[in-house]
Length: 159
Image (cartoon, rainbow, N blue to C red; front, side):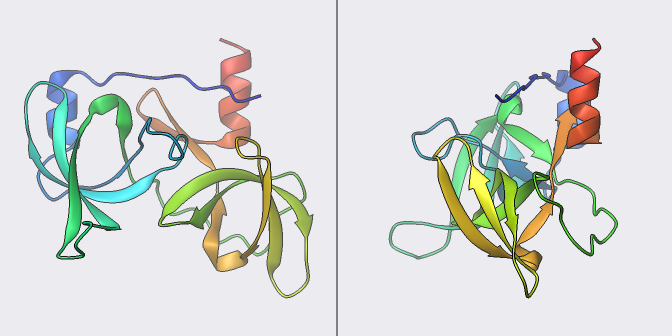
């Protein structure tokens, strides 16, 4: 079960937070992309609560450059802060896994040798092997702050 809370930034806050050149992450509601976050750069504001972004890794169909797309503020967040380097992830720990050019939320289902892990993805019912370097601790963007996954759950449970 996934618990999410959407927070809409005010116009002034969004314009300030998402100014031209800012590195962000964006998400899509398109089939097959739900729940993933992709690195992008703000190109410009294109109206109230909307921004044109350029992906950092997704390319155009003809491979002539990086894909550009418009997003509203509900689908844009700042890049998560660097966390302390994690030596090792634990069984059942919630992580973001770098897969198909985006960060996907999963759970460590098995700790393997050689700094590798099996990660289970609830939405697709898949289990995939990842190197430690392709994982990061999962964090949620709630009320304009980054919160570690366990803290976010506790905050939502005690609202």
